[in-house]
Each structure stands twice: as structure tokens, then as C-alpha cells.
Image (cartoon, rainbow, N blue to C red; front, side):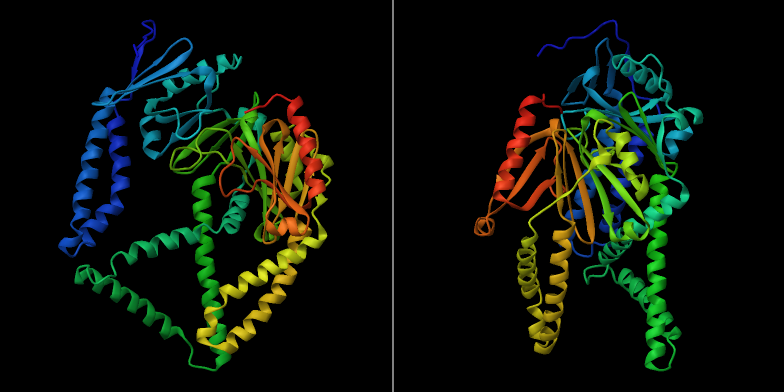
Length: 507
């Protein structure tokens, strides 16, 4: 294909400081493998780790050199990006196809007055283009061009004024709300799991003796310290001490969770302007992410038992195309990490003002379906508890009846909390016992519609109705209405089909 170049467009390069940032990004990726390779290799059979580390270092050097070959042009109707040394890659992205302009600023970025830019379109997967390091002036110029495409004359600043943020803001998180989110999310468990996973790499016999000896010494030191504090008293004293240690462990986990939440959501501010949502957040690394409201496919309200304790909910969205995971780039799924439950409907109206959020009338599923849930739960627990027979038949004989009682109350609660709501403009579904979720979809976003029946559904004259959207992520909570009569499923199917037929499909 012959390359068409707009000679009137000025050729632009990455900032001269780019190699430093590329080097740092590669160093962060190599730190963990380097530690494993240097300290974890104790035999020749593991020498491949050294070779893999050398190969990764070579790739890092090549990626640093590539910045010299990176070019981009801001043409009249598109941005054109060229990159690569041996294998050249040319991307031409129309301005009107760019859905999101996301900005990333770490501590080093702010020191040098630069920013990393991520451009998203509706094509899905990875970002259309990533401009690693450019000046704030270059970002402002690109923002102005995109705003003209949206018919907006006012320039959007890279750092909006406080007055502007306050005017357009629909949700701000105070430190107290961030603390609540940290307690609800319990992300501290991730940090603990990573730590123990890292330590486990050095415990095996194939590691150097000095490494194993150091870890053993540390473990013995902690163990001796704990045992020295154990009171030599009655059984009651031991139980009290164990309870205190459990509280201390939970407190450490909560502190870690709050710290991680603070790093991520510090100064969180969600604004809405010109049918676009924009979020700014972050303590060390500041992020600015945008998403057009018309791209939102589903809205999910999260209401776990911890949310209920704090009288809060969380709100996430799925979009068509764009970035789907944090490994691919900036994501904006948590439009409300934590929100007072009383403000839920008001917030949803801000996100999608064309829906009648105040008139939600949930319809229950078949009440008799609790028996099916109960039988499935009892059967599952019966299989899971079978290994207890090897340990003790009496243990199994005690545990299984307890699980039968638990299954009974769980089945009743599950059917009680499961419901749906379908109108000419919106479909909604809620379910869950411990982790309750409500998912909402605008009818024009429905891409596929189907009725499903398994053997047990046919036996009980029931069915499941599923509504899929373009942004459906596997494993997420979607519109999948189970345990409804087949006649009801057919009526709902006909209703949604008629509405889809009369309304133009929207991405």
C-alpha cells in the first residue's frame, strides 16, 4: 500500500527524555525475573532463566533505540503514527474515530513536565496508539483538535482549574470514602499474596544455602517472637490471645488495603461534559481517562456484604471496544469506586439521563426455583466435603447437615434477591446473596438475544433469557435471567425483539 503523506502536517517526535522513561519501564518489568535468576538459580538445569533474562535485556535495549524512529503527524482529519526499526508499523486513526484520550503522569513525568498519551477507538483490544512521552503543550494541541471534531470551541486544559472541576464534577472521593473503599475491597490480600509468592521462590533446595538460611532465620525469629508473647495460662487465655493476633493481622491487611486505595484513588474526581465522562485520580501516578457516555454498554451496581455494612455501593461500566484490561493500558471501569447508597439513583441519572431510574419495578423469578438451587447446593457441598471422610466419618457426619441447613437459607435468599426489569428502553437484572449485583443495559445496546433451556429447565418448564452487548466481558455480571417460566421467557423475547427492530443499534 502506497503511503500517503500530508506535506502540510508537521512531523513530530517523542520528547528527548523518552529513553529514560522507556528504560525505567523495562527495568520495572525485569526486576522480579532478575532477582529470581540471580538468587533463585542453583543448578545448571535452571540456567535458561539467565538466558531468558539476557534476551529480555536485549529487547529492552532495542525498545529504547526505537524511540528515535517514532514519528507522528497531526493531519487535517487524522493522526498518523509510524514506529519500528526492522518491521515498520504505520497507523492512521481518524479523529472522529478516537473515543478516548487518556493521560498518564508518574512522578518522573511531572518532574520533566511530560505525559504519556493513550488513544482509544471503538475497535477494541489494545489502544490504537500510545505516544510514550510528549510535552504538555503537544497534548493540549491534540486535545484542541479532538474538541473541534466534537464541535467544542473551548480548549480543554491538561490540568483543569479547580473551579472548572467543581462545575462539571458529579463525584468526588474524600479521604473518608477512600478509607471505606479500602476496607471494602480488601486489596491488601493481593500484596500479601505477592509477598509470599516471591518468598516461596527462594525456599526450595535448589536455591543457594545462604538464601535459604536467611529466610529460615527470619521465619524462626518471627515464630520465637510470637511464642514468647503467648501467655502460659488457661485455655481461655490462649483463645483470647489468638483472637488478639487475628485482629492485628486483619488490621495490617486493612492498612495495606487503605494504602493501596489511597495511592490509586487520591483526588478522584469524575466529571461529565459534552456527553463524556472524565476521571482524574492517583497519588504517585496521576491518570486522566475519558469515555463517551454513548459507548457505555452495561452499568453494574455492586453491593456486597461489606458494602452493606458501610451503607455504600460501587458502580462499574463496560464499554464497546477500547482497552479491556489494565495490562493493555488505562481502563475506566470504576466510575464510582464507592458511593453512598442513598445517592445511587441520582448518580445513575447523571450517567444515563434518558432512563427512568426512579421507576424501577423488579419482577421476581419463579418462587419454586428455590428447590432447584437448594438441591444443586446440597449436591455440590456433598462432593466438596467427601475428602473429610478420609479424615473422619464423624467430621463428615457433622459438617454435611450444617451445609444442608446453610444451603436451605442460601437458596431462599438467592431466589429472593434475583429479579429482572425490562421496558421499551432498558433491561435490568439483579442477583447474588453475599455479593449482590445489579446490571442495567439500554435496549439499543442489545446485540444478541436468546432463550436457553437445559435438561432441568425443560423438566420444570423453565428457561433462561440472555441479552448480550458488544462490550460483554466473560465472567462479568450480565443480563442472564434464570428460573423464569418458558411462557414468560417467550413474552420477554418478543418484547425486546420488537423494540430492537424499531430502534437503530448503537455501539
